[in-house]
Image: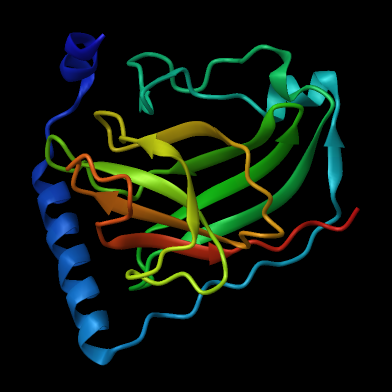
Length: 205
């Protein structure tokens, strides 16, 4: 399995090196000012239920191996895991510098929350590094984190990220989403720069 993951892991492209450097520069500049950009506001939309037919179309998922999309499997249909599930939130995560964005949908299922993330803007990181999605709670700081991981992923060889992650997290208690670029050092705590962030605002029932 590890050999298969290594074989599927794409090499960073020249444009990705530029994006990673731009990200590091933006994080360093933000840190020098002592404040972070405000989270992107989320517009409220009516909460809706996904029926069996709509789920097959609207809740297509990437077939992922450790968060990496397998070649030729852009967004194949899943089983009926999301059938009759409730969409709790839909939001756009945004980079601190206003560049990259990601569309995220949170779906309540019988096994927890499924976080569907779609973006073409994230750089392919150097080998050993990965992106991690976090539900962030009040008072979260680097020295005293208050967050729960929803999982990790890599973009595919075209730089696309089409991932579905499952987390048993209550967004009312952890009302923000964050994506960080992690160094792959074995430390489960967040240690890399934040690349995307937004508030979670639950849809009306």
